Length: 220
Image 1 (cartoon, helix red, strand yellow):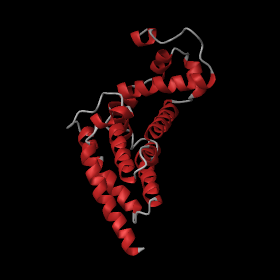
Image 2 (cartoon, helix red, strand yellow):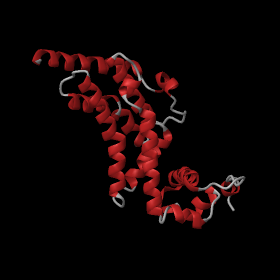
Image 3 (cartoon, one colour):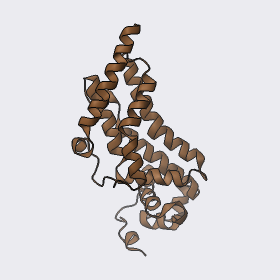
Image 4 (cartoon, helix red, strand yellow):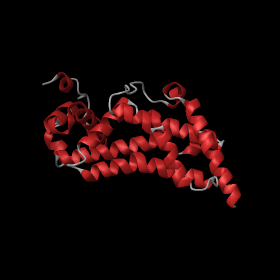
């Protein structure tokens, strides 16, 4: 038995939904460490401290387990991101912090590895990659678009897309290509100012919102 398997908690028997969540957590680490092809159900069962029979009772194949892991990762991500109104009362500050938080989460090492894994499996599992894109990128854009529309910003969808592209994509792309190192620190909101260049993001957001609100006023 591997060291990882030997250290798997066996003090009490997990059952039902608790076991399922534990398997997902372990499987996520296995997929990220080894990639999809090299990951095995044997390894997941051993490291989860459960039997292959129990593992297959929850997930009937490695494909189903992988898809479930990606679904679970998306839920965790959206829970951490929240919506712009959760960050500040002032719209410009709320949008800036939301964009900064999105960037912070996306360049965190586990998320970078998850994104690379999704890209690597895009041809074999296009449904999973599409769902990952919808949750990580499309859902983020929809949340920002909705917030901007609520604050009477014209062309909210175009502005949301432009803001995310300008504040997030350059650093994310460099990180995915190993030009920049991913962040290895836990992405807590309290360290957001140290994790991203908030002053630069605030400048971009303020200028964009002024333009959007001026256009809305002139056409209203």
